[in-house]
Length: 558
Image (cartoon, rainbow, N blue to C red; front, side, top):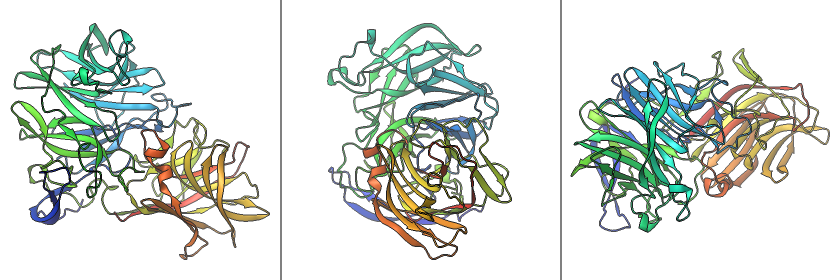
């Protein structure tokens, strides 16, 4: 990869933290900086480990296939996706799962030459472990851990040679004292046979102070330092009240002391009107670099109008400092910043994670297989697409995105607030039920679909919005030709524009200013982010049609 010069000029916004309403001032600094989020778009619940001088990071994937994207970095700055942990149908069958169900909060650890990922399949068989000697795969089929009742498991390998699995679980005796009452529990773990041993132990009941009714303690990880066991966990739910908290104990079974200055990471106390807010920070993991410095990855959100965001929960990175034998996220003030100095003055490559930063990416379909970043909605059970002659051909099938099935849908995360996605396709039909085009999709009941179809005896371009009956037409226009057509969706933050072009570069607005907040997490709910996808359907009827996509391009401007 082409390196950028090692000395760069950046403009960093520095905030005064003397009151809740930060006053920005501009400071010029000369050094190397990385930019947050380090993984833009729907990459939630990050977990990280270090192995053989490299760092490995994974994320939740919910009902998308393949499951659990895995990234590699030599320096915490330059990241490359090297695969997906669950990339075979035999490992992960998502049939019938809602979009925000499925794969929750995986955790990755490395021990004695083996990589371990533990995770929860919500609405499935619950908790499991997979292993690999090469993080690029292949990873094993899941070994299920039925004794672990809860979500968000994480393995811990103690210095005394013992292994443990820690997780979010039900309240004592399964009796909730209040809504959101959860616990952190632990088993000793037999690493040779991949199963629990001994008795379940209660480590944390409720959270930092049960008298204050803390909610949704989850996402736990354990570390050893200074002769203590440190347990970090998320608390407060995964929305704007989200936070990260820490406890410590002299013994792994506790009792655990809550840090008096908890939380160690949150943005919930800041002014809603602050500049370029990052919200919902929490669900963190930590790692120590080669020089003894600590770093934390965590999820956060970038709203375009304080509370609405379509890009989902993203992965951020910040330094961690140890103060009085407690880990503290060192944000250089209260505000999560876009820029921080790179670890050990590492040079940021020009395009380390190719879907981050300002960029134009064009997929020409000139490889025999799709790249690791492409997503299917649930697990494909048959090969209904093919790549040949520098084009992607997708079969038009009855399945729709409104159902909990695997439709003819191949997607890519929306990773920026402002930008556009476009494609060129060839699709002919004389049936009103057959449609092909671009969809911007949040879940089964919240999407917009820009497609070519047939209506009133003519080829048409249509825009649909999801509705209780599946889809409602927002706009339609007859096409002049049966030739190839280009489609484009522009994201402007609070609005989407939907355009098309017939054989030239003269874009025609089919409909502009369409409410983007309809696809935001605040309105649509759930835990995922918006996906741009090539999608074709025959709306429940049999079809032998196909659509050919010549290219797929994303341009971003924020």
